[in-house]
Amino acid sequence: MPRNATSKTAVPKAKKQAQRSCVACRQSATKQQLVRFVRNKDGSLDCDPTGRMSGRGAYVCATSECFDAARRKQSLSKALKCPISNGQYEHLRVGFEAACAQFGTQVQNHHDR
Ligand SMILES: [Zn+2]
Image 1 (spheres, rainbow, N blue to C red):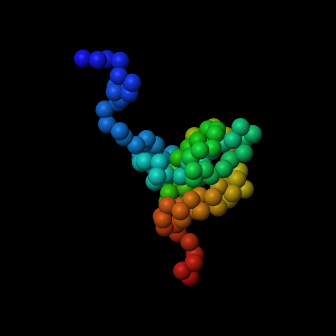
Image 2: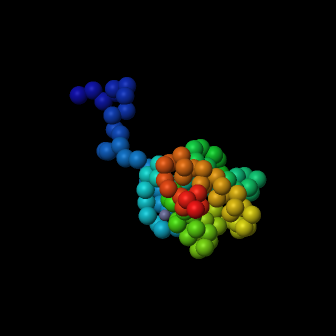
Image 3: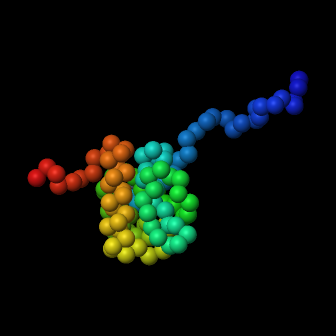
């Protein structure tokens, strides 16, 4: 039985999606259900809906509850190992809500009243 086949047949069993856990509620989910935040090399923080930015990343469920909890409990700050100011949270929230909209998640907005 030939062992030198060109294709690598020794792949890990099942092809599973990368699971990440939300820093607020600790539930794991696929990346599609989580919004990534990243701390860039220069120390700036950004929402990274594409998941491709380099830097230290942390994930939060695409719900405003988890974003608020991550802020309240400073889970995001701890996960990214840096303090996050109110101004930065406002900046992140804008990106977060845009990402949630892309995900089709309902973020509680005031557009109903
Ligand atoms: Zn969560």
